[in-house]
Amino acid sequence: MSGFIHLVGPGSVMSWMPYFRAAGDDDPVVPLGPVDPVDPRRLEQLCAGRVAVFVSDHDTLLRDRALADRLETAGHRVLCQSHRAVLLGMDKLVMKEFLRAEGFPTLPWWHARERADGEGLDGAVVVKARHGTQSQGIRLLGPGGPPVTAREFCEPYRDGIEYSMIAYRDAERLVIFPPVWKGPTGRDLVPPWRRLRRCPLPEPDPVLSELLYELTAGIAVRAEITGYVEIEYLVPEDGGPLVLELNPRLSGTMRLAAMATGVPVFSPHTLQKGHGRPPAVRLAAEIPHDGPAWSDPEAGVFATSRLTVAADDPAALLAKLRLHSPDSRWLAAAAFAGQAA
Image (cartoon, rainbow, N blue to C red; front, side):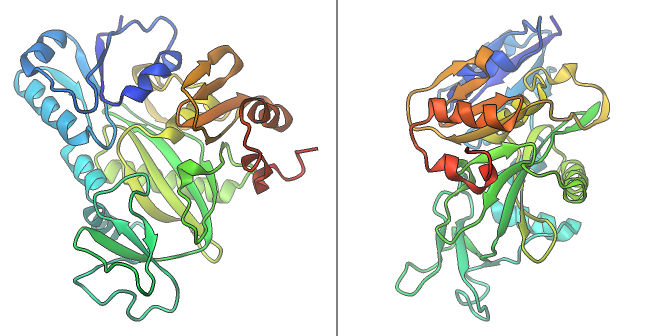
C-alpha cells in the first residue's frame, strides 16, 4: 500500500482502470461519478491519511478542483489539476491566449466580436465551441449557415496530420509518452476519436518526435499541469507542429499510449522520478467501437467507445482489429498500406 486513494469521476474508466495499475497496487479506488452528488465530509473521512488522486474528465474538472480545494483546506494532500490548468482546459479562448502569450505555435483565431466571419481569409474557416470537448459543435463556416455566436470562435482550416502527446507531471517527475498518430485532417471534420489512431508513429520521424517532446514539456510546465494532460497537435503540409488543444484530464489516447509502453498509468507514483520518456515496447492501435464495452487484458484488447489493441508486429495488430471489428473501412486506412495482404 502506497498511501494513495483514487477518486474517479468518469464512470467509463472503471472497466479498464484495474488493468493499468502496477502489480501489488491495492490503493483504494472510489468512483465519484460524473454528476453524482459528493458528500465532502464523507470524502474527508475516506481520504484520511492518504493522498487524494483525482481522475477527472472534462465534465468533472471544475467539481474535482473544488473538492480538492476543500480537502486541502482541511489539511489533506491532493493530486489534482491546478486552477490554471483547469481554466485552460475549460475555456479554449483562454487556452489560445495562453499559447500566444507563452510563445507556443498555434493557429490564428478570432472571436465573433473581433471581426466579421471569415473576413480577410481565402480558405475555409472552422467554427469551434469555446467550452466544448471532443469536437462538440465543430463545423465549417459556410454561406447560409448559422452565424458565429459568443460561445464560439474561429480558426482557419489547415490540411495536415494530427498527433497527440500524453504527459504526466507532479512535484517529482515529468513523464512524456511516445507520440500518438491520429491521421490526416479533412473538410468533413471527422474528429480524431472517430478515426484510426496509432502509437508509436507508423513511420519513425525522430525530428518531429523531438519537437513534440520539447513542446509538450514546455507546455506542461507553463500550464502548471498536475497529473495527466493530452496535448493535441496539427502538423501542416508546409510547416512545423501547431498546438491545437490542451486537455488536462483523462483521454482516450492515454490508454493507447499505455498499451504501447506497458506503463501502469494509474500508478503514477511508481514512475521514475525526474524527466522520463518511456519507449514504446509494443504496437498499439484503436478504432471507433459502437458496441458494448468489454475487455480481454491477456489478449491486449479493450473496447469502450474505442477498440484498442496491442501486438508485437503490424500484421498481428491488423489481425486483431479485423478479428474484433466488422467495419472494414477503418482497416483500409493509409497507415496500414502494404500490410493488408
